[in-house]
Length: 205
Image 1 (cartoon, rainbow, N blue to C red):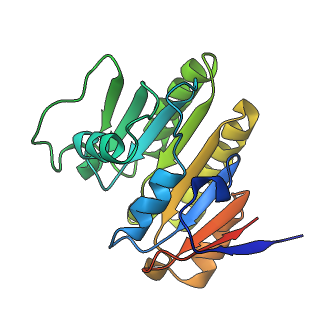
Image 2: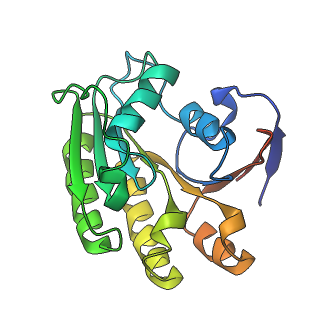
């Protein structure tokens, strides 16, 4: 049975803490970023490692966001920076390479290469502890690959994440797509979090 709950505060404990989550939020404004950081691990003592797939931000930009929002975040992260996500906003101090591993993919439509990169990272890190994955823009991915191909990719990836007991959230701007596309992609996920511009959130499981 499908259940939903409107969440008006920003307590990360009120969000799904496992499984694969579709984060439906406008790509402009701060509500999406706030919801994203709420769903990242907050306990520095935990063994959780975080994998970021970046289409919108550069590796350095994401590092700054995590540092400013989550000062107690886990010590080690991996980044797969895709297309423009690998070059935009690269000015600034480099994150420490021993704790922040960056891989760049130049072709934003290369789902095979992305799948290989994620499978390698997941296989290595899942053996060492819990894993959380943040995929920052399905909306941009859909500019380079059709809906059916993206759905097949998500179906395989979310199955792999479930096998490993990993948690993940995937960003999608619902205003950029028709209802049929959103509904089709949503089938690959365990739950959805819908966020409006004011930051109000509806969790559907």
